[in-house]
Length: 440
Image (cartoon, rainbow, N blue to C red):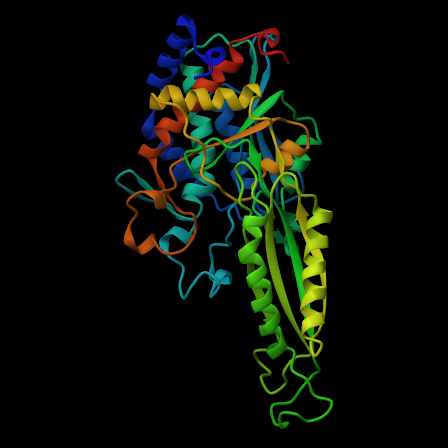
């Protein structure tokens, strides 16, 4: 345990008082209320405005930051006496699914209860679209600050709670192309800042490295065909059949990618996410183009240009070995990875909080490649640590929600208590000290 971050007698008393003010029912209700406010990417206004009112009700200085007509960010501040550092507590507020029939059949043959924006309470579980990610994270960070307010802790530094839209790794063309960290980018380029910050995401770990990602589109070429034409007829070439060769080649490259680009905490994965070709309503006419969409994750030391070069090299090699295939490709989305030094104050604070809670040395985090707003926050100049809560899949989960990612829609309130206490620890560790003590 880092001795610099061990709480003194007064700080420990504040910590105990704040932890005693954690209210599970208040947390559960806020988690459920947020599930009931639908906030798909690019349409987060109602959820963010709800959180602004909630901030005001618990005594924070709060404001809604509009980004456009349908989306905006929630900002709440708890000020100290002005002599301490500023701490950002952040989570996204948007969900990755639309929560209606537009998601079918991509999510499966039906919408499960964890994919619908309607909260179901079952013992300690909150079930519904985004109940775990992101709604429980928003609720947990808010509860941590609420407990600090109720404990009447003498803060020197300022706490900023911020929840932004557009945090999911996707974009929505019909809603201003929102996504890919658009909300938090707006947040941090329009007046919100901090000396350092904490982002809350799934997994009860401490991460100071934050994955990036690149999106590629590969277009395999053929000709417009007709189902009645015999195979081998001159002037007619399928785009779909050669695309299967390209898919298998890319998949092999993706399988080997993590071992080539591992960093301290990141093993960057990648998936072929989508294949599109032709008209379902015109099966008699095979299309001239089959598009393949690929998501490749990156470690903090990889530049987007280097990843693009590696993908370019892969594609040229595929075409050299398969001269009968015609294809073109491009990178159409990207977000660079980033990192905070492992010995930075906020990283060590989060690690010490975990060790204080668990009574043992932190063993190190499992490798990951889940891309979040952390990469952009860090890139825009705020040193950041990622902390989290046990993913529901790590524990007993109702069988009907156990397969696949689903709606990230089952949160366990009991599992949030330790992480909330850890957040409180870092709040006290950071915001009851002067800037000189922390050297910021």
